[in-house]
Length: 240
Length: 240
DNA sequence: TTAACGTTTTGATCCAGATCAATTCATAGG
DNA sequence: CCTATGAATTGATCTGGATCAAAACGTTAA
Figure (cartoon, each protein chain N blue to C red):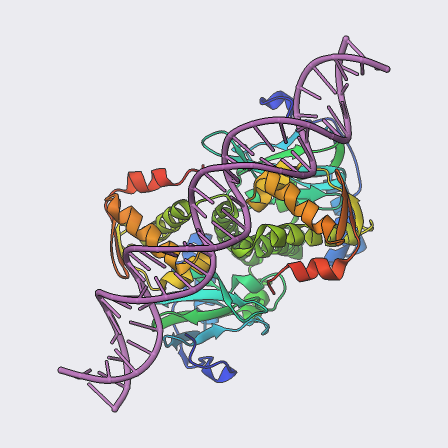
């Protein structure tokens, strides 16, 4: 899917943008938010197939997705890629590197996208003036990580249908939170990418979709998903 | 395994102890470490089968394991327990609640143990005087979470033997880091608990152990594990 | 010591999901 | 528009791990 394997495809074409949406929940005051606005220097456009960051490279920035869709994945020894996450409009990307300062995965745009770039060095620098800033940011980051963690943690013991239901419910919630329809959305990723993320083969993912459709719980038209019966979808998930 | 299901088994019998071991890597100065020593008010003894914290309860403290072994797990709707982690001497417990302030899992001692308790409220209060403290702590916590995350993330696509090899290598590294033998150790948890953690049945775990032993990679004497051939064990893990 | 109970191992069978294969469908490029 | 290529669906078969069952082993309490 990525068009190039070298660094030339890492986009650096940027323009200034606002970061208020992400900062307001932090409980910062007006002056502090203005400082942050200043800090977020870049609005980057990323074409489908281009990388936002690459595994092994130094952690420079956090990214807030303004528009579009990303996947992250790690490359295994044998060259296959293991998808580790999906990121939609309004979500935060780059957290894989907080602890090590080095990215552990590649991040690729699955459609033409736009992100806000937050240079981490400047964030740390500024947090000397706003003591609570770093605290809040780390808290946000922890929450994001734990949330995914919680979901993935439990996949181990789930059957294919449960995994897919969990995945759809998770996506649905995230679309809802961002102001989109929670019952009607387009999957930006392939069956293979879903499978990789869920630890299933693409054929199994496809069959699970078909079965959920046969049971009138969802309808599937290629990438377009409509959830008819959220309750029964939730019942598919055995866990707490 | 837990002897009681009510709160009466939450141990609160404590005495003061040092917290330096955990704080020195933070790069704090002598005065600050002394403040932390003061902050760590409690050294708790926890009997095998007792709870360190319970799911749903308010997040009060972080715990550093001084001696012993713990597991964490969540209860599913059907009552079965899904093991989410193991914690040995020197490791940090209670991180599941950083973001929500409420514990998402139970923590139970698998043998008689001793922990340092770090009241979180006092940690936050103190971090007003030492601005970098909270920053460092969140960083440590993020690292811990991401580390586990990374391991579990990849289990989905692994076969039983790969999962067990990953698990053993992980344990081995952690024993090594704490100054114990990395090739010779005792498993404090049952086959069922390992299975729950890895998304396998206890019989499958047992068979995987037997197969690794047949191949002269490890030897298993009930709970006692000896890793003869670390290289071949590592080769069992297909992933990066 | 023995008895009782929980844990581990091993065997036999079954089934969900992987694998292999063929067809249909969707999208981009000429 | 048509063609080429990748994505999705569906079918047939195979297999790793779940499940059921029984025996061996360990630990605790009487």
